[in-house]
Length: 437
Image (cartoon, rainbow, N blue to C red; front, side, top):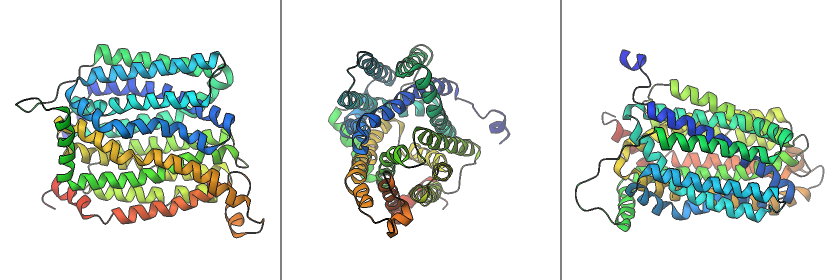
């Protein structure tokens, strides 16, 4: 115990260097994405058209993740990460030149986001496995907390920094900052970090098809991991519909606007930041599965209701804080559970299959969220009489339809948590980790 207390970061040197540089690059990329969401909604005024930006990003991720994971297990992970980062930088440069020449259109962003999504498909499993190889097993929970911490800090800084840079220097300056942070991360990874190779089983090297089937076979034998992925897939469906409806509601609702969107995003980041600090400080829980179920239930049963019923920025911000404060604790326990049950030599292919199973609902959710806001909820609210129950409950005007969707999502999220919290195979993971239970 004393040794752990006096040297809590033992074996994390390379990880901290990689984490810090990648977090800086993530800030640059997030600022560009934030600015482009505002730009696209101002151009089109449609929740669906804006949501399609994310649909295009995630579709390649879902379609090709199975192949990307198998390739990641076979190829040099550092080279994969560097190559994908380079293509992403070229995409950002393309946006800059199109914007500078006055030719940037929404369909350009769809194509660029799709290419970026394809690169992320290969980079993510390589990055996940690299982190596993860079740190000792006893640090798995701590590195999850670090990753949540940086993600939270990016969420806090993005709206404020992006808005300030946009106001004083324009979109070009946002893109320049993005490219600068990319260069710093690229050089750090290329020159200062050595990613060790995982231990390989003796014998003939697997064919790509066999690698993919091996990942699927592992999941079929480990139904707890598979069912946990389906649980998160259902949560992602609800969460992505939330993400699709949030900017249109806050940008168009009375009392909202760009400042309101920035405040809510910042509060989301602040809640994540506090949750990450708490996750890093907490001891390993007796039941990781229980932590995952309870934190997700709390998130789903608070934020969506406050967004639906709220009419002012403080209420929306409170919803963001309650909805996201415990998510880092959920993520750290989820990541630790996954890393503990999946051997490092097949993590790339299993994580990639997870990306397809667990994340295929994200583009579907964005598409459904945009469609429901534009084609169902907004027209339904517009047709209500001023004294109708829905108007009294949710308000009127543009944005009230998104509020109706948030109310629906609140009940949907609670239902998902209630169903999967009873799954026996998921709870069996706890007994496998702690045989004495």
